[in-house]
Length: 245
Image (cartoon, rainbow, N blue to C red; front, side):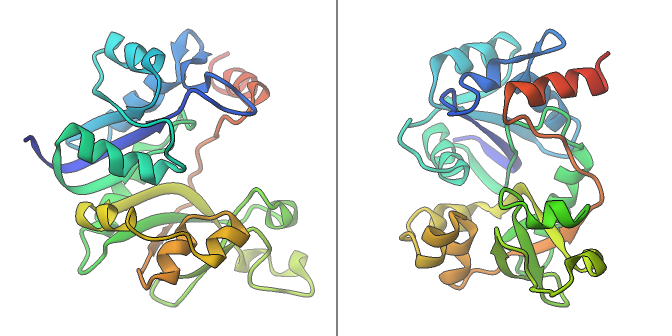
């Protein structure tokens, strides 16, 4: 069994409704999964591991000498895939960061911020939030909003604008968007996989609400940095034009 203090896991599925084979899509000649991996290598993580359900992705990762583990295709979320990766790989880690596989230009500093947050006293789940960019983003149901207490503990996540305001345009600075990166104490990550789906999670389609419903605390840190994500082939084209031309 390999012991690792800080492990980064990149969940990568081949199947995607809007963009099948997305992890293998080339960005200026380099597979997206490799670009994510290389960015993660620049952080303070001790080891990076791609967790996939597809041999084509596994072969790609091996071709650039990355670490990869096969996981079940039936897992419903990236967090479940991270949990399975720990079990299947036999790696004994202390801290685990779930890195989005569709952010080829993720800032390594964001990963380090999550790691620092996890190093705090009694912090078992950590994530990042960012100030909302405008009214349109706040009202976009694909952008998850979050409210926290004065200490940065998440109170609730929603696809609707929270907190409620009769005039969002005058209160944009009060809104924060949840970014997809998570950090966990490894033992907590294993526990989360044993929880049953909760009512709030079903209604909002947000797995983190299951954790809140079961009494877990999610600590947040604010960042102004955002990584462009790739959800469609058009997103890929935009990133190439923006950063590589």
